[in-house]
Image 1 (cartoon, rainbow, N blue to C red):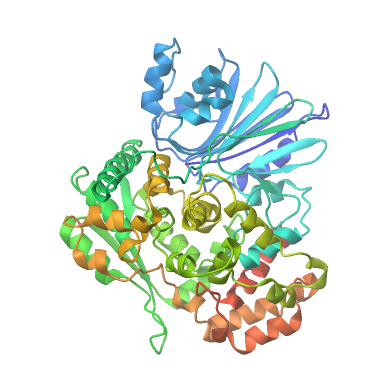
Image 2: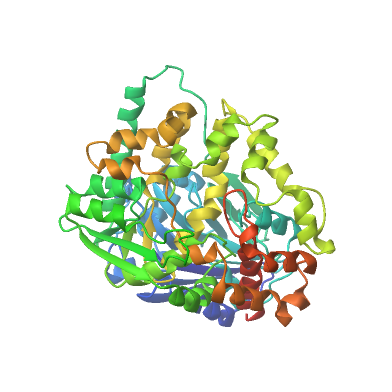
Amino acid sequence: MCGLCGELRFDNQSPDLSALKRMTAKLARRGPDAEGTLTDGPLAFGHRRLSIIDLSDKAAQPMVDKELRLALVFNGTIYNYKELRLELSGMGYSFFSDGDSEVILKAFHAWGEKCVERFYGMFAFAVWDMRHASLFLARDRFGIKPLYYSLDGASLRFASNTQALLAAGGVDTSIDPIALHHQFTLHAVVPAPRTVLNGIKKLPPATSMTVEPDGSLKQRAYWALDATRPSQALSEEDWIAATRHVLGKAVERHRLASDVPVGVLLSGGLDSSLLVGLLADHVEDLLTFSVGFEELGGGAEKGDEFEYSDQVVERFHTRHHKYLIPNSEVLMRLPEAVANMAEPMVGQDAVAFYLLAEKVSEEVKVVLSGQGADEVFGGYFWYPRMDAASGTPLDRFRLNYFDRDHDEYLEMAASRYHGPDVTAELVARELSKPKADTFLDQVLRFDVTTLIVDDPVKRVDNMTMAWGLEARVPFLDHEVVELAAKMPPALRLKEGGKFPLKAIARGLVPDSVIDRPKGYFPVPALKYVRGDFLQFMRDILLSDACLKRGLYQRPYVEKLLAAPESHFTRIQGSKLWHLALLEYWLQLNVDAA
């Protein structure tokens, strides 16, 4: 829920309230229900509210606890807030509201920076300590909720999206060459703290940051994922039973932490279908939503998975909403979707989520989504390929995942962005971190703690919150992820991947859904680029703005334009779309700021 922003001055000047107003305006779509601001000496907060828990004005933000002299802006949901509230009440704290926001304030007062370790949920928040004139910022374990910032010697500004920071002004919008390398090698994943813009950073997942009055910063990683086997071996049946238990608890937590109805985004795949199955007995008249897209001529790729989602709807008698989007609308609405991306995202399902969220937001404010299951439980085709490959861990990863090898990057990028193979260095460093028993443990941990944050978690947040719709991801409950990380990778990859989820679903979800080949959220026109979509990308890449910016070497661009369906990444993305998307994002979000 919500969008937050703020400014903290270090130079004895007052915050720029006109900049705060511009930032808050850029967050309006994340929080359409209410707006609030707060100033206190060097600090200013802005907030846009999406009311989900405690719909009353008592839970409005910025929230101030006058007795504790603390103020808060918060985006997300703390799923165990009721249990924490009881504990804090037992410690003598009294509450003036009924939601999760005030629990954060009391928890921070009680436990300081370690409060985040007590939270189950998705969150990005800032707490202003009026007594010490210090600011505390924190982000959830998997970066489900975003938190960007810009920092100079005079002030810190922070916000839920980059558009707000750009609107505030004074941001260095030059391109970070290291981030650019990541952008085109890890299919638009730029790990924190970098973004593609030099002047905007993002707080890493599972990290808090304390900012003192003099501008000094202290970051603390409060959680790390252990991917080693337990001391006592478990049987296959034990692992499946444990998975059923923790996933059931997670789904229930995600469902109950709401004072408004909760629906499910039903893709027709195993993950979302299992969520429906687990919820069906607990929710009367469960709302489900599916989207499909027009097929391309020649049957290059099917554009919907309705044949599977329809079976789930029939099994559980949900109140279903099904939307079929023609390619003409996809192309017409692409500018909106790109303008709402906090960072440039090449996943073809970004526009799918954007268009689906528009429809869903007319019915509910909260939905559950299956994102994260493939990364947590080993569902992608490249995991067994990596496992079967030979060479160093980096070699095995690179040959099955990188969008471009370094030589091709040098062929693509203008010479001023050339340098060492920084993405290879990053991946080698991440894979070699301790507490991972096998190569696949290293890969799956890297995926779920780093890669997933920007693809697809960020995509889901941005595209749904653009319509004031909160998407919750139970498969990224940290207890679920911690259990899966302890599990032998071979068990996760058994029977084509996600074996524990298939075992839980058997007898609950139709077998045809469980045993179907792995599907994706297809938007064929952004993969097999032809016709109007090819012309759209050609216009972007031949525009005056693109030529003047000079990110790309022209022979490489011409090569892709000449044969767009001949240049795919190792995980089957369009390389032409990658180039066009980044340039278009810069035109819509940076040039227009």
